[in-house]
Length: 276
Image 1 (cartoon, rainbow, N blue to C red):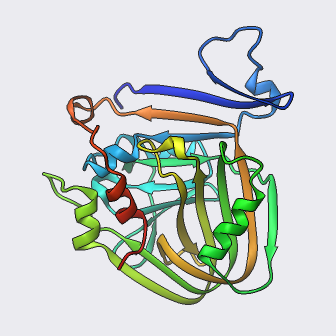
Image 2: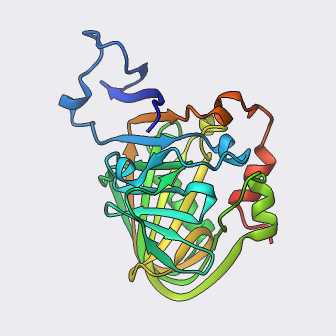
């Protein structure tokens, strides 16, 4: 594997004060993360969402290496081959045939985000709720909209609308074009399973997806994909406040020499939301 650039940012709550610091200088004023019990509160990310939007789909990190960084998360695979869900330390690949497959540790990813999930807050849902209503409910539980949160929702869903994308060939098209022309959409009814993903603040724009980004897999680990909308009958929401962020950038020629600076806000909205 090629050498990677790494950016490691720690967000630490110290005596009620939010401190933002690069984890390079081990000065006396910097708390020892390993001793503070926050070593697992890190969102580990491979590449950036803007790079993925620009069509940089070549895998950069193996599943074996990714699983060393977290047990819950999401992403995609080399050449954009389906949707990734990481749950309970296992990686699954949702392909356009609508089925989930276990993934070998040698398979690589061009974009993924994972964390070691540890519940900080939970709430039980006893009545049917639309995805938009659940989003508002979760947001009320956040102590701050300036922090990062990993989320897991286990439950029974009256309706679950998900999508996946097919493997691409070079020269790779833009992600927005893949979604417009080739995505496969599936609607599941009366299904039990888990939603996993993140809510991230506005300032990650260009790096990751601001707001909610969810993937789903059923309890049988057979079906799922990128979540577009859902209705949950009952279940439990688990929230993990994440104190750190580590970004690993590719060293490929495509990334090093590519221009990914153009505004992709509209494209990201199209890619992440259900406007069909």
